[in-house]
Image (cartoon, rainbow over all chains, first blue to last red; front, side, top):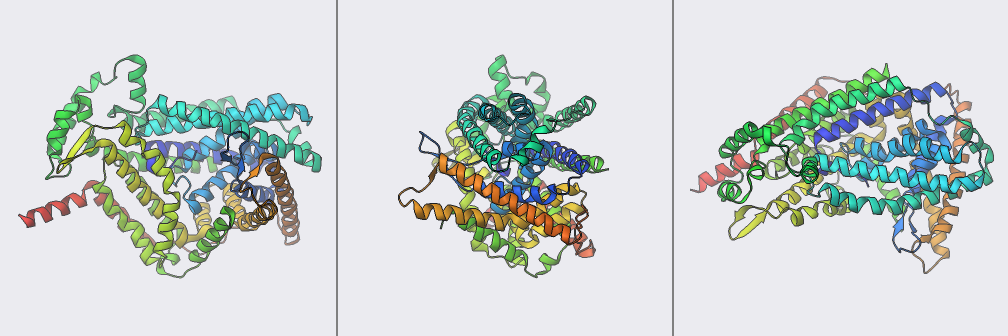
Length: 336
Length: 270
């Protein structure tokens, strides 16, 4: 479920970079504080393990299709959530670079979808709650399966929301969601089964490895910091996404239109007039009868669509660069 | 050869490419990283029905391939190998968006087809630029750039270590998986039970290796801090590279060069 550069807008890509960058910086700080030198080569080797394991496929029982390990959950069990998040982020970065899996701009989205939900939501809230501190085999399986499902469902929701907000693909919110969630339910179950099997294997072969990990507190969240981070994310998303979402009738507004029965475009009459006059000035493919066909065939708000580029695109570029700068600044600030 | 083996060769080959010695290879990695990010931001900032204005942007990956003396055919092959994903997600656009956008002679072209072509163009641009960037910079160069751009050190160190052990562990996995397929003639992929065993074994080998590496590092005086070697610095060539390309991207972004060119040609024909 890797997002690709071709399917996201710079606003969404930049925002998710800022969020994932912040999470990387925070996790790095936590890992550094642990000062466990043994972890340095261990994290590197486990990253390579996940990378290699993802290339080995197996048949999913009863379906005939094949699957592979995602890895976020097993990494969290072995390393704890912060180090696991860093390892997963590095694996995704290498995949983006070597195999063009996803892409550089979409990397922020991918790190968030595949890393955040498993390491910081499914592992501490579900796996740790069910499995507890004991290493008894009985609780391991349900804990891993439920956490696997939750992590992948949330990740799939993330993919759908990011795609719809970007507005490049025409897939409507509900259709896309109803495609993604059932697929990832199956993948989540398999992820949980494999995770519990591998963890069970390690418990038998090297019980001392997991004993240390099981004794750790799941996650130390500071309420103040979390609130601060969420507020910052809201401000960035508010300013950045408004440029990309406002003039587009599809995406989230499409979903709003479906749920509320009317499009929230009433107060944008002036904007639409502006855009329509812009459209008259900028012809798309001269020599073909595009201008007439578009205004005649499309409903009012649709007609404004192709012309949106001149106005919003510059803003889009500026917004993309600005958010990237914001991401860099956020990283620098967190690095202090 | 299985998928693992092919990927192994790919990783090794890109490492070889990045060891080249063109002026582009010698440029500070920060300049290349920054320029490629500007490029990708500019490309994805177009609206979804834009195709013609995207075309001039092929100049940048083409420049990287030519100046970096990269094998264009190999990179194109890699591009095609990942294309099915972009096609899969984009192919819904022609189905869902059937509004006729313009007439091409007797054929009406729908918005969905235009946005589908746009997705494929974006895909080709962003992927080829990222692959070319890696091929002229190398993973170590990119890590050096990240460290010097202020990315948190534990993450950079993690990337360096991952890159260092990638080939070793992928090779290990490839041998295990080959041994399995040699012993199970009719079955192409394994079932869950064998997969779990294989993965568990691989994990044990991984942990052993990590422990050996750690001891070897201690023997060589590891004190918990990894030092990233700095090879290059930002000079006039780096500044010129970033500024020139930023200027080019700004012009391509502001003006539809294909359209201007098309108008010129159409005018000359009249």
